[in-house]
Image 1 (spheres, rainbow, N blue to C red):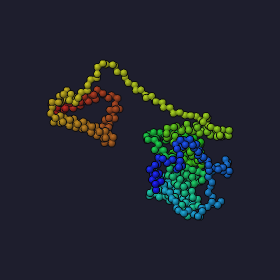
Image 2: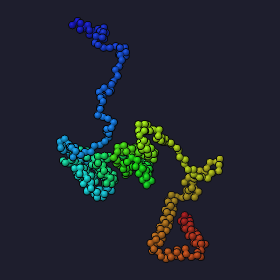
Image 3: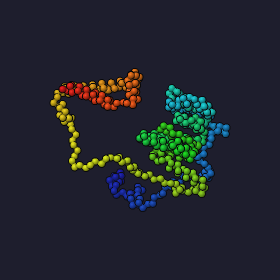
Image 4: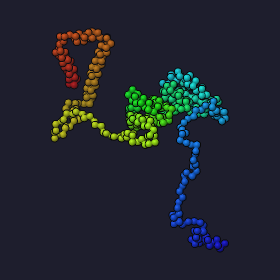
Length: 383
């Protein structure tokens, strides 16, 4: 009991080596063991260079490809909405789609009320991945791809990618310009991209649908589309792809770096010169411009400032009525001439235009008389 109390009260006297601890100096001097990340990695003699890891094996029930339980345990289904303008086309080609999906034991449904397409597995479905292919088929049909091209996605070699470009550019006008730049004049840029990548590309609305039988070409096409929306012209990427295609033909350059052969395009922010407007040079004057008169000044000059508010408002209403009546009369005459209800006036206008001895001075005198009469009416009212 005394020994225990002694150890409790005299902790500082106890040597640290009794508990197997180590001082700070010894910790620093001790060499640290390096981690061996390849400790459990072993050589794989069956994994050789001649094996293509990207090769997709076809599912063939005749060769013994079967599910473990004989059928799928659960039913899987996918539904896709389609726009209104695709309804007539889908109704026309839906028997062809149904026939192709029946071969893979997939049931489909076209709902015209909700505007949706649905695919689901059945008890006879043997390929577990074919439902994903059927889902991609519906997406491609909804994005305006022809049925003959869209049905190729049911093959194991074909893949697809739908690139959403609607949210990559903020300005609507800029988005339309860049999308048109991707298509090119008469679709030339898009056709060149299809030939280089070996993919089918369709630009529709806010998406770009890409189909191909090689994942490499699919990736290249999607990168060109995204770069185009990020203000990199597709002609630069097309030029790079053309050079890469030629370099791939040479077996000597298969394991070398191609960066020295590829062009490096640098973005240059060159400010555009704004067109200079032709303006007449004003003569220099040291005096400031005259001050614009106020409403009160204009009323003082005309003498209306000293007239009561009631008379002033009455004059405004009279002038408005006179102008309105003149405009209505003018429109009425034009309407009658257009409808042919005033043949006499129409004949007078035609005769006056055809008459070679038309008196211009007489017309001016008539106009002057009308002006004088309107001025006299206004002066009488004001007085």
